[in-house]
Image (cartoon, rainbow, N blue to C red; front, side):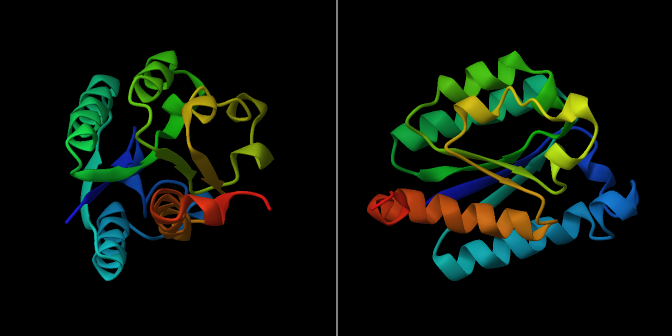
Amino acid sequence: MKKILILNGPNLNLLGTREPAQYGSTTLAEVESFCKIHGERMGYEVECLQSNWEGALIDKLHDYGHMFKAGKVLGVVFNPGALTHTSIALHDAIKGLEPMPVIECHISNVHARESFRHHSWVSPAAAGIVVGFGVDGYLIAMDGLVRKCVNPVATQKP
């Protein structure tokens, strides 16, 4: 069974308690649980990792890049948190993993927030982007990842 990685960056361990008006009351453990269930229903094993350390995120992406080349991985759903707006290193790590798809995912609509959140260093390297759907965005991103990989013609314009 191929794997999907749900990767979360800084401060996402505080989901459910940090700014619930912005991010909701669902905890990271709950997000991980429903992602695993959704993945199993689609026929994929889901691994989850959250880190407040940029290097740990990059190391995990590199690990998945090797597993992708071995045919063991479908791709990654990645919420880089605030590193979205600051990390060229994450951009470079994702670019270095091509053709493994990485879907960028954000709980809030970053474009409707502070102006410093409007730019993403991750987006140009991502295979797709999901923003503003709350924690359901993780499921939408997983669905998009599967569609992009399993039936790429379905995601192209006619």
